[in-house]
Length: 166
Image 1 (cartoon, rainbow, N blue to C red):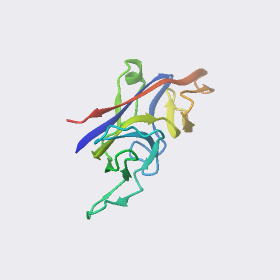
Image 2 (cartoon, one colour; image 1 turned 180 degrees about the vertical axis):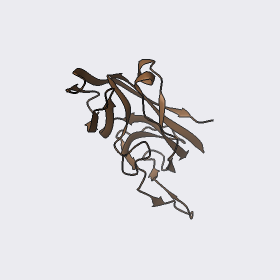
Image 3 (cartoon, rainbow, N blue to C red; image 1 turned 180 degrees about the horizontal axis):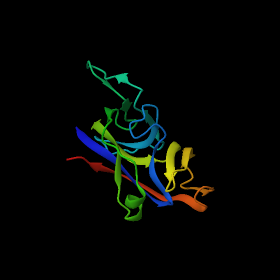
Image 4 (cartoon, rainbow, N blue to C red; image 1 turned 120 degrees about the vertical axis):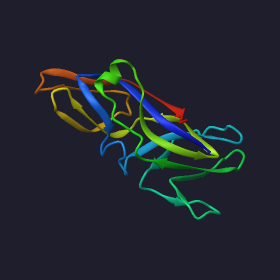
């Protein structure tokens, strides 16, 4: 068992508080991740979608989890459980210093996430308070012009990594 935290950073121009649409613990936000088998090391070729509100029973157990997946290479089964309450929005200050902030914690047994794909369903606000919702970051960036602040706003240089939580 290992606990991995998804860490994100980005360059934010005249923007702050980048996070999923419903906040960092949004029960319906889809996390698209590539998964590595803890037994043979095989990495899934496609992303798997995890959603906090989706739970399944753990085989041969009384518990539930967010994902149960069998390795296509060695046949070993593993699971990942999402643990809310550890994430926080990416602020302008954190983005300027390229600081990574936690987004979600994953309790991994037999499989683990190795790559995160930014997708749709993000929100952010400009430094003058204009809110932008439903942002799609799958292209790697977002740009607009803020009428209220009379300045361009932009999200770019998106990065993510998984770190072991000690």
